[in-house]
Length: 368
Image 1 (tube, rainbow, N blue to C red):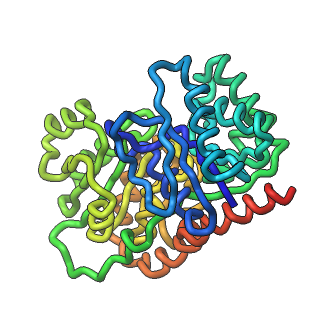
Image 2 (image 1 turned 135 degrees about the vertical axis):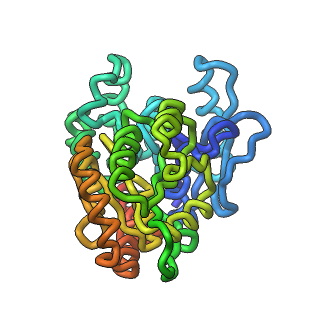
């Protein structure tokens, strides 16, 4: 089966982590299909694509050339490999119009996989008229719609009613179990280690709520540290830590590789999220794959993967409850069992599980 993947988000020279979760999903079908990634990229940039997946670069000078540039390279793909069986669009905008027009031109089924939080109720009002029109057009021509959580599928259908009429399947994010391996038992440490990983976007991740909770908790006890991995700096957060004298408790570690994040998780007592909205956070699954429990909020698709065996769930924005559950977790971490947490996660996010779901959708779509 020949599948052309058109990702709206993809790693590039300036943002090496952009859409890396999409690439990991594509990799799960690389062995069972002949997969081609079609994406625009800067001259000379080599994307991190495995050898069993072909990469075809698209180059253009301005947005007016976008469709013709993609169409030209798609014609080159047909000349080299033959007509594709499927086009798999990853995130509807901005490349969904391109993918849909190509799919219609060559009468090729189009599958859409979605990760975008724009469909969440607090975000969808920011969609402009053109984006709303484009989403209606794209989803109207889709053969199948997938998203990383049932919550996201519901929000897509609420935002774009055309999507509700299509076959839908939850296909979650994928985690490399070799990198995010089970933690080894550790002896007693002077201080419990808490880890937070995010972009530090306060609107989504509520980093300031986390820091206020750390400040309040530090007035009661001094047996914990919070390590923060972040893609970008948040000057407001850094200033708060410095002015509140939390430098010995809160540590900003900057950007880390997947292997480094895995090591940090393996050496943490628990993971912490206090998000205002989410879909299905990759890093929460990564935490579970290392056997590390979490505190997280009941937003988006989190309750679909978090339960009493691997996490404590709290309401978003409730800092009083956050402080209470932080204290509970610090005192009762032994109630969670690393092997159970990992085994349950592997049933959700292993490459075999995710790839198997996609292959089933592919076959059903082609046979339809």
